[in-house]
Every structure is written in C-alpha cells, then in structure tokens.
Length: 135
Image (cartoon, rainbow, N blue to C red):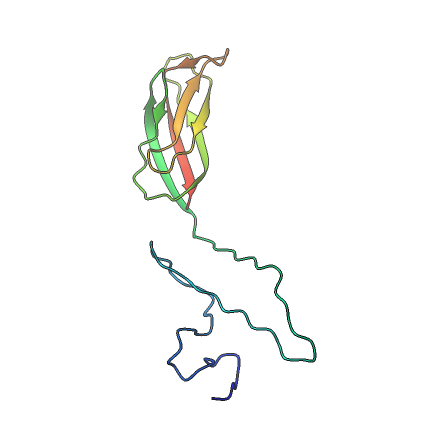
C-alpha cells in the first residue's frame, strides 16, 4: 500500500496503528505503544529524546463543616482522585482557638490530612470548609 495523506492509516486497516485523534479516554491497565516516523531524505533520522505528556481533566470536591480533631483529620473525600494537587480551606469560627490549618499530606486514597493550628502553631480542634483539587 502506498502512503497517501496524514489523516489516512499507514496500512489498510490490519495495523493497530491509527492516526492520533487528539484525545483518548485512558482506562486503568491500558497499554500504549507509540510509533515514531521520520521524514525521508538523504540522512537517516535519529530520535534521541521523546517527551510524552499525558494530561487528565482536573476534579474538584467541596467539603463543608468538616470537624478537625486535635490530632488531625483526614478529609472524607468521595471522588476517585489519582493525585491531589491542592487543598484550599477556610476555618469556621466555632469558639475554639484555631487560627489556621496545615496540610500534612495529600493522600489521594485516604484523603488529605489536615491539622487545625492555634496562634502558636500547636495542633488544636477546629472546623472548616475545604476544596480539594486534583485529577
């Protein structure tokens, strides 16, 4: 078969390789094989580096009125995050001594670990609203 246009498959359909459509839903366990092509010419093409960038749509989850224990609390996320990139929050005034919070980790399976802190940065109980962002 003779190669005709960039949008046409290289072979007549019996090949696994197809033109890139620009987007693909990736399922867990999927395996991908990439084919690189160099243009014809007097010199042989050499690929010395390949950068593949795979992007997933961002997800957000809002959690309101989360009670934070004095030893810290994991946010009870319900979405299936692969990675958590940020946690934003606002502490509620409930009569306690908490003035800020710290993010101890961003575990996508267990939920981010949050600790409320007083003015001396000691861990205390608190309550707040949080927005978790990731993919």
